Length: 282
Ligand code: C2E
Ligand code: MG
Ligand code: MG
Ligand code: MG
Image (cartoon, rainbow, N blue to C red; front, side, top):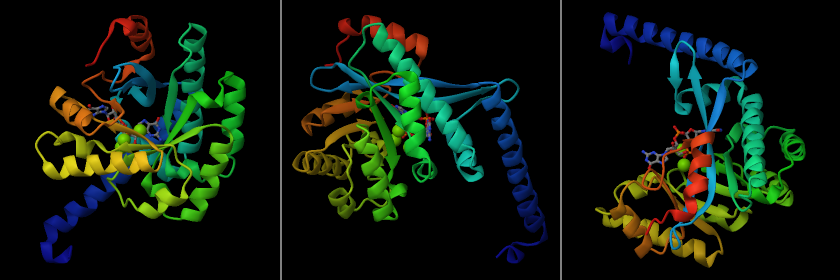
């Protein structure tokens, strides 16, 4: 207990709590300003077809370079945005930017790229989500078939709710991917019941796949199950050629990670597109 640790740690505990909530309040306010001032940007990380080495799409990842505080990682501010409800408006900003940019690239002739956007659990259960997505697709002129939403397993605690909202998303023609697959409380029952397209194997299994037999077995198993369920599979967090070789052995069809490319600014991603036909990742 707190008391058992003595007076000093008791005080420290409280100071710590206070600092944490102050930081929270600070970041919440700064996020509100940053939304108004349009200071959130997106980076795009290539997704690759492992057999051909070809680019198939890109995951949009939000970036915040605060004028005084510097770069703040999404792992820090997204949870606060979720707790405070700001994720609703921030999520719309992100989706709109990603769709706009993807449509611009389509106009440049890059017509077959799927945009993946992360969707927080909180957003998934936002009551006007479907209307907002429809509006953004209409306003940005992006055909829904080029959009994929990545959701994590934490969204599936209530299978019935998840099923109906995911079905509405699928009915719009949007693809759905389970992000960080295997890292949470994966259950085969939701694979049976949920209308998802893709399993995105969590980076934790890829990190040691070239050394760890268990990770290899798990990845092989996920790829096999996906194939039998007619689901697509992508591995995230591929950093080395050794990891890629293991994924080739497992016949994992798609991959993403620093080995291929870090997340890129829109300009740099555009450069990447221009030279993509010369790139091979074999
Ligand atoms: P995620 O969706 O699983 O995204 C993958 C994270 O791994 C990204 O971190 C990406 O930059 C990083 N990554 C990609 N390849 C590699 C690699 O080879 N090695 C390593 N070590 N890392 C790699 P990032 O951008 O910091 O995002 C972290 C998490 O924050 C995301 O995990 C996602 O849950 C959340 N997030 C990021 N952008 C958004 C967004 O626009 N909306 C929402 N709701 N969440 C977001
Ligand atoms: Mg993701
Ligand atoms: Mg992930
Ligand atoms: Mg993650």
